[in-house]
Image (tube, rainbow, N blue to C red; front, side):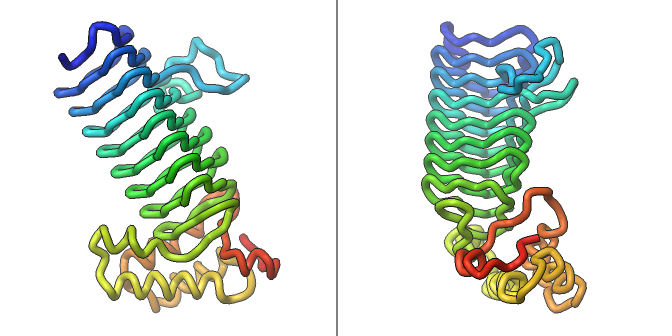
Length: 251
């Protein structure tokens, strides 16, 4: 049965073809589920934001992409602005007791593991992997194919294709992730080189990235994407532990 009789699906919810809603799941008004979305028992999708200033009369919602699976007790809260959506992309996996806060944007093919928490207004890039008990601060950006190790705490932006652990510690390139995606050897070499250009040179990492991008020395799309990511965001960027210890400028 696509929708279990004990599930709560409020008026105005849109269910795509082939959606499955398990026992005791709760799908609130304003939620749109793409084709083939699976929502497991006791998950709650589209409830009110945990924002002290939110007006419950505001009409907003949640949009979940096709083939995404939402496991038991996971929560996704609706947006805080009128007619806006918290968005989770296609083919994602939100594991048990994970949380996606209001106004978050989650890309495609993202894994958010058990008890990982993504605070409001954060952005998670395509193919990112958030391990168990990861904590993402409000307004942070996690780049494409970045991986966060178990119980990592992130309060600054995580560049694309990188690996982060513990508290704002950047380890290097997420080689396992990019290789699994089929990146060429030349693309991986350029991403590695771009990483070192940004972080090995002293000074402002935004400026280092801008100069490298404008130099024309990087032609692979992945390397250019890595460098371009430093031109955006408001929270600063993770840095390798040795650079944090040296006190280099981070923005």
